[in-house]
Length: 226
Figure 1 (cartoon, one colour):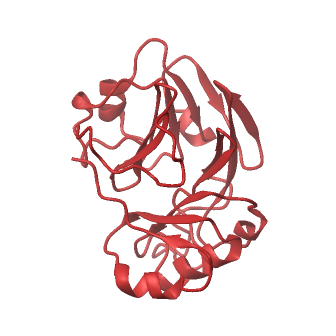
Figure 2 (tube, rainbow, N blue to C red):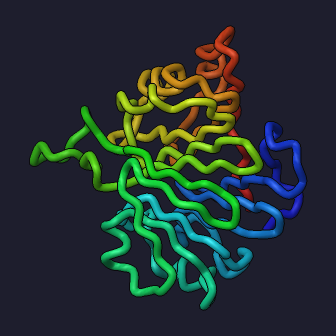
């Protein structure tokens, strides 16, 4: 783990940092507590990651709900906040299940589950890759800052209801989540202070940065921590 990995400028606080580990996996450190988000063993060596005080899981697809990664970061005291589909499969204690619209609090951090789903992109049988109500995005309120982790989603109407988002992580990969046009539309619907792509196949940083000129949104691709 690179101790010098870049953290988000908006936090401006040594006890609040976020690292992108690759794909849809993040690590948030708050007051020496570690939150692992959707740990995925194919993109990071979780045997070298700090143990998790809390694990957030958005949904049960293999690249978000990975038991191998969990086995490497979970201890007997680790708490879980998950979607219903994950909770039904996760044989662990200390699980809080949230459905869209529900919220809880952990260690002084408010955690709200918000919708994450597909409208346009579908499987060959015409069912969405991510049905409405099946998975979660999360909004974490940490030290009076709101962090939006979108999960696997398109530019859904509910994003316009998000308010005062300081930091947003939006996915950008086809056909499962968003293309560039959707990504830009989604961000402009709720105007976070800082916007970071994650769970992407490719990102044209220069082209996307221009899309956010004069919007007040700071667009930045975080380096992936090695």
